[in-house]
Image 1 (tube, rainbow, N blue to C red):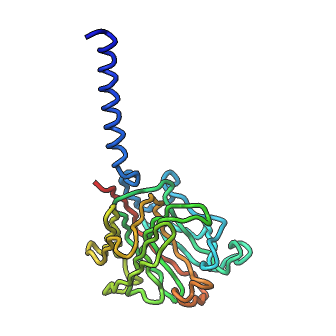
Image 2: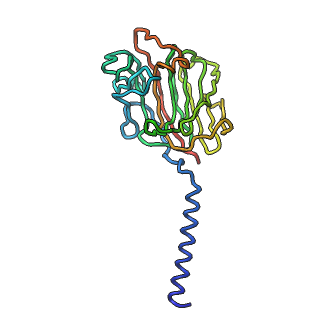
Image 3: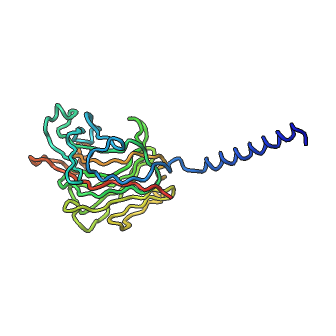
Length: 256
């Protein structure tokens, strides 16, 4: 074999290996990202989380986000809804509340939190992932939501390319506003499974619409419904004192 033939054979082999690596890489879901973490919520963790501040969502939300409405005490995070300084200092909204989210996106795996929900018509206590698409564009999302109008139930949902309509109401068998309970969902390419206190309560396999594929920020918030959302949340009436949703910890475990 000549020197040039030897080089050619080696190059062919290298190209074949490269092609194989590219092929294998292409089959790996880009969504499988994000290292495992357990956030104990002993205080702010700006290296991993951010607190929404100085803005509001849309017409469906009756709150503006304020960092001062996030509280930490004895290993518990509280998201406080009140009317202090509103609407002028609440992004034009009648109430203020808090939202906490990871600074990076996470993919396939298990998202969970230990939560004590807020009670009252019009309120929503949440744990969800959100792909963070720009306003006006489609997004992927997976939801756990406890509506304050009936805290004996939990609602699951997911959005793919902005398309939702996959909600299911789960009877919890307890009042979620009276004590802490563990809420979780496991997301894979073939299913989303929701759990309460380690018990499987609902599964989606894509039969009602394609499952999400985009990684998302892990988020929690407390908000009151407004405008069109009141059909779903019920109408919120401020009781004259702050309302809180409580979170003991937030955890992510990537899919194996």
